[in-house]
Image (cartoon, rainbow, N blue to C red):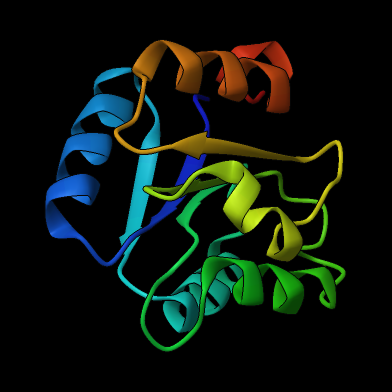
Length: 127
């Protein structure tokens, strides 16, 4: 099975482009538009990977990550944070773990593919 990816961003243009790209690679994509839904859908679906905007309505991606860390069923899900802001500006609120990455918008799809390969077994193929 190709990876199930939970994608969270409040900008429908971004979710549309990323959903199309990831689906085209064979991944199953679940799209939400705020941090609250991110926490709910992660607990419900237990995706292989989460890609989330840092700043969203109702809860930032970084805040939703903290909620996920408190749940045994979601705490080990790798996360790619994305933002239009530079990493150094966001570094104080982003977790620094082997299971997290940061990518700046606009998204470099080659870089995204590298991150997915680093975070998921067999580069996204999940047996």
